[in-house]
Image 1 (cartoon, rainbow, N blue to C red):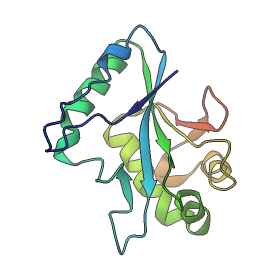
Image 2 (cartoon, rainbow, N blue to C red):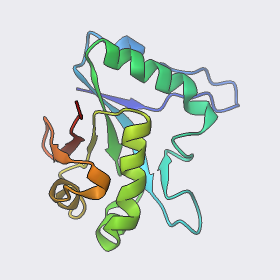
Image 3 (cartoon, rainbow, N blue to C red):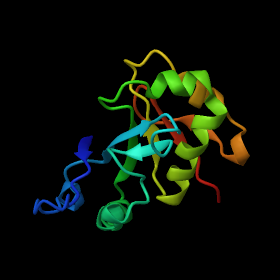
Image 4 (cartoon, rainbow, N blue to C red):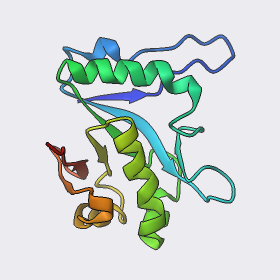
Length: 151
């Protein structure tokens, strides 16, 4: 397993760091970090500081797809250092799970890692098996859940 902290160009001249070299070294790559935010201040779901659909992430999503084509599973790391992600998920699961589910589908991620150290949230994701027909099942690691693939 490898941890990948969104290596995007920030506009300050920092070059893009691709996750592609992780192929052959890891069978699972965790894309970090997705955060659940107060919808009055930010998009509900952000990858680091921006919506996962932000243009700056386009090269990364292409490289993530290339990793998956080589058999590497790519999961979203939910939470990271930002506080409140699991508190929000626990307080209003229906509102906060939808953007997670949508990001998993849009970017064809293989699951979401809900760190075991978190006290709320992962059990809700694992227990919920009916959100818009999207089945969620336990994945390979502790605290992880994964969307089942439809035929």
